[in-house]
Amino acid sequence: QALRARCGTGNLPSAAMGSACSDVQKQEADKEVNKKADKKAEEEEEEEDEEEEEEVDERAEEREQAEQALDNLQRGQTSVFSENIKKAKEFEVEPNKIKAAEKKLEEHKQNVKREELTQALSKTVDSLDEEKYDAAAVKKAKKAVADAKAEGVDVKAAEAKIKSLEAKRPLDKAETEKAKKYLQQSVKEIVRKCREEKGRQMNIIDADGKKTSVVAVLDAPLTMLSLTTEDSSGDMEIGLKFIQAVEVVDSAAEILKIPGFTGLSKKKGWKVKADKDFKKNCLRVEYSVDGDEEDVKNAIFVESDATTRDKVLFAFKVLKSFK
Image (cartoon, rainbow, N blue to C red):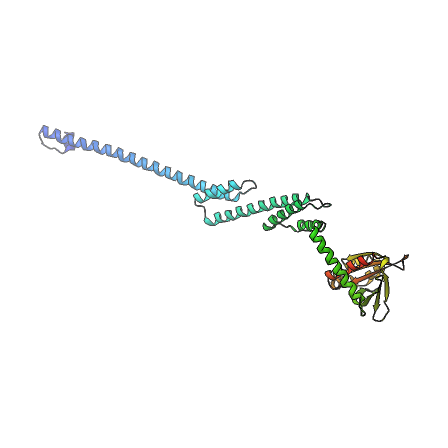
């Protein structure tokens, strides 16, 4: 009766009632199957969602690690850092952070290269023999300087050393002939002007530290140079064969070391003014008066430029060799 009530069959015949109940039972069974299938599908969907969330979390963590790796650049790990940048791009790290990392990498590479070039330059220059000129070694050093300079390395010290060495370089045959010709022309130019009736206008530094104009006249035998001032107060004669030393004076400080001029250090502001006025165009001539070794004097000549100064230097050195 209960079954009949559930199936709603009322007074149906037994066979009809059985068929109806069978249909109901089948429907109930199908509902149970569908319910289980729905539950299973729901569970699978939840699992998939969880897996996706885990993947998202894992990728976010890896992305964060990739981003943090962009801050860690150490010497000797440029290739590792390059890979870090590549990985950061794959994880779509912010473009500005990737750009900053790429800039950092490039700067690091440049710094490493400069350090390597500096070390190579130092090693090359330090190996140069300061006493003997080696053309091949100097050429190698020049290339090292050029390479280093192109990368922004400070090469002033290296250039100065190479320049100093090149000053000692022996002249080849053509250069020797050219130097001889220049020397001859320079000496002839100075001698010719000093042999003219009006003499050669020159400047000397007097005992008071002032630049004084003089007229230089050379006698016919080329043995005596007479210097005449406008008021004759500073006239002097230099026996060329009695010249003991001729040298360039680079600064006022050097002038203050020369006997007869040391007292100028007491004159306030003279040193600064002298460096400005005379620059490096001074020439010291040390000579004995009439060959008296006990009576040695110094004359300081001031020329307008280094080229003219050197011509006068050549003339004195050649003329003093005449006996």
